[in-house]
Length: 110
Length: 113
Image 1 (cartoon, rainbow over the protein chains, first blue to last red):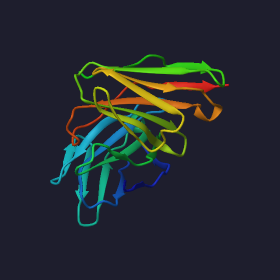
Image 2: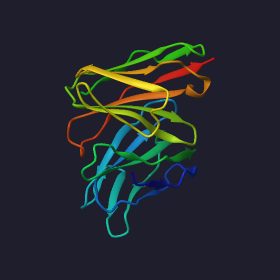
Image 3: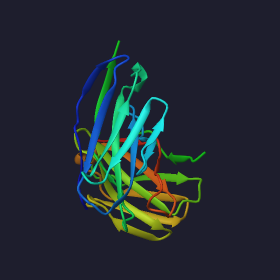
Image 4: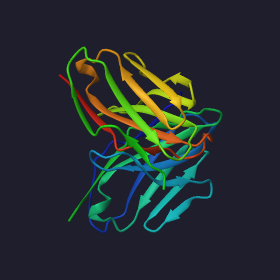
């Protein structure tokens, strides 16, 4: 299986800041993309799917760039509660097994 | 609401013991997964089951086996636990469509002494 790469961080930002993470994938045949959020000592939970046309949910925006093979997550107006690890997940076409990045740690401070 | 449950949140076992970790999902999902998660290494796939009695090895199957006798239940077995199997174990389930999302259980933190 191919690789999914993320900057591990941590990204240390003040409340109210805008922060963006990227995730690169190596398999051009990849078909579906997700961002998961994982709080400390908890299980990963789906944050949002990433569609070709982009996806926005409140303060969160996810984008897909197929030409450069990366997905991005933008968080606007960061809250203390956004502090977590953000995992990028890529499903290759024809494979049952998703590939997880190692995650990017975000710390939002007062 | 999808629910994935795991039999224990915390487990302490001794080297050489046989360990069973159970996972149950209530959404009639075809696919189920066992991962372990260690600091700095991310999620690593141990085994995957795409249907009842069907299984595939993941990236790190050595030292583990699995059982899926019923659709809702996927068990991970450590035949003879070793200290390097101390980890967080996460179960996940998903519909049969590879493009659908996974739903995770709360995890079992296993310590092998």
